[in-house]
Image 1: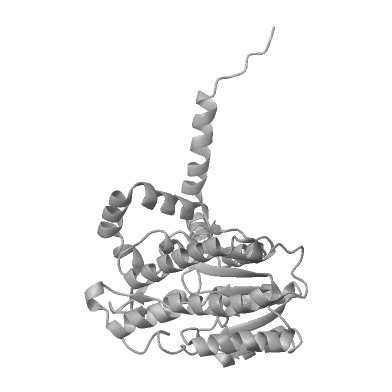
Image 2 (image 1 turned 90 degrees about the vertical axis):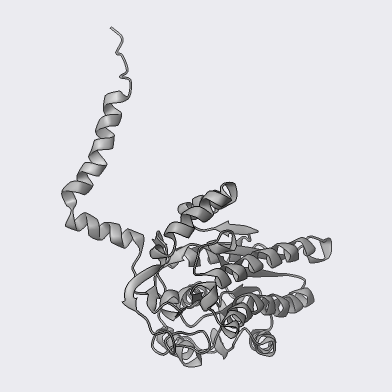
Length: 336
């Protein structure tokens, strides 16, 4: 359902204690929406609302582990009890697990599936129940480019993101009947973002994982969420190179697999050590990591830093193509 404004809309956001979810909650509040923040870290959400100086008439937080259906269903009930309805539901909570398949424990695999895939299914089910009573509503499922492609070391994460895309597509087809035509479902496929997601991830390799370039500011993800909240789109791929990545994987799957199989591991790991146990948020929130941005910076930050250190090379890189273009573009004749 299209909205002209977000003023007074009731929005539920899962995974709202850090990263994209935290920034999205802030932006929805700034635009006048009533927001229900949901995450495992209640203290982090309360601290954020205190920082924003908003009261319970504008926003509340509900401690929620999305892997638990009862907690997600209670979240929906709490949102309706507090604000009378739910206009927009954003499924955003996710965890990640880095390691080769043979290194992964079954309980770790199951946990990622329970949070990422079942968590979004729980959110869709809980929201749909309210939407059908209201006869309208907007679902936004935040996924990843790995819902359309794969890379090594993230086998379980990629499986869950493919599952989100497939489940969402089937549900969208079911909602195309006249009875539910005002219930919309958008899936947003995100590229690498500069958020704490990689700090939170569990690594079985003893090294801190890093995002695959290009790395975007989380603002681009929030802009896509806000756009879909106002005007739902079935599927949104964020970032130009994200579209290239997905297209290459679809058109040249074997070549893509060979490329990532030979180069993908090195591109996802830093040289910084990360303990295998007790230094991630897979089963419990990590303390003091509930911020929006991570530690890697964005690709644009890197390019800006490079330009400051190497101004002559950057200037040459910009001027030479223009010079060559000038030489080879046919000159217009001036009539005599």
